[in-house]
Length: 134
Length: 134
DNA sequence: TCTTGAACCCGTAGTCCCTACAGGTTGCAG
DNA sequence: CTGCAACCTGTAGGGACTACGGGTTCAAGA
Image (cartoon, rainbow over all chains, first blue to last red; front, top):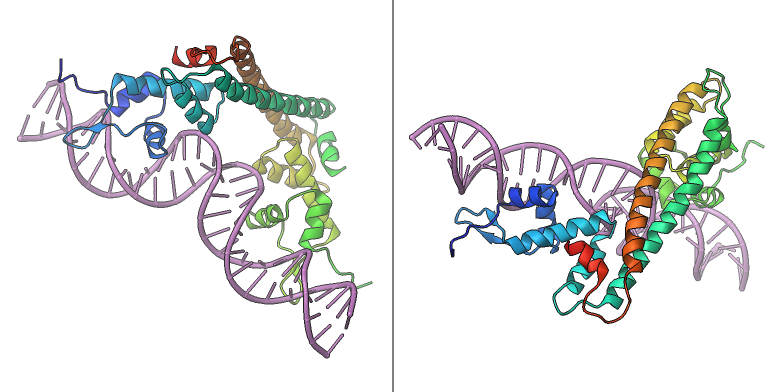
C-alpha cells in the first residue's frame, strides 16, 4: 500500500480536462502546489492534488478569475468555509457576468440592426461603413 | 492657409475618446499612419487622420477585433466599398457576439442558481463550494 | 527674454490566462 | 536493449492595450 505511485502530470491533466501546460503554469503561479518528483524528475501527484485541479477547473468554467479561484480554495479548506465570505466573491462575479451580458446585448442589437440593412450586394455604399464613418 | 498646424496627439486622442498611448500603439502596429512631425519631433495630425481614429474607435466599440478593423478600413476607402464584403465581416462578428452572449447566459444561470442557495451566514458549508467540489 | 510646467518623446514591461515551441531527458513496453 | 511516448526546462507569443521612467519640447505668462 505504501508504494502507491502518484499520478503523472499527463494523467492529472486529462482527468481534470485541463491542458498539461496549464498545470505547469498553475504550479508556477502558485495555484497548484509543487508535487513530489520521481527519481528522474517527473512530477508525481496525489489524488488530493487531482481534486484541487478539478476544483480550479470548475471555478474557471464558472468564469472566476485566478485570484478569485485562489480565494475560493482558501475558503474551501475544511473548517474554514464561511458561506458569507464565499457569497461576497460569487455575488461580485455574478454582477460582472451580468454587466458583460448587458454590454454584449447592446452590442448585438446595434450590430444586428446595421447588418440587417446591408443589402449584401456589390453596392459602393454600405450601412455598416456609414455607421462607422458617422 | 498653408501653415495650418496639425493636431497634437493629445488633441487627437481626446477628440476620438481614445487613450493617448493607444494612438501610439495603433501607429506601432500600422493601424494608424505615421503622422508628420514638428521640428521638435512631436506628432502632427491632419483632420483626416482624426476621422480615421474615430472610425477605429467606433469599430472597436462594436467589438470588432483589430484585424477586422483593418479590413473594414480598407473596405471603407472611397470607391472600394463593397457591401457584400463588409457584410461577411460584420455577420461573422455578430455570430461571435451571439455565441458569447449564449455562453455568458448559461454561466449566469448556473451562478445565480448557486448563489441563491447561499444563506450568506457563517455556516461552515456553502452551496458554492459544494458545487466546486462536486 | 526667460521660466515654468504641461504635454510630448521613446522604449520597455506589465496585464490576463494560457499556449506553443525547442531541444533535451526519462519511463516503460516489447 | 531499443524505440518512442511522455515528460522536463525555459522562453516567447497572443490580443489589446496600459503604465512607467527618464528625458525633451512647446507655449503661455512675467
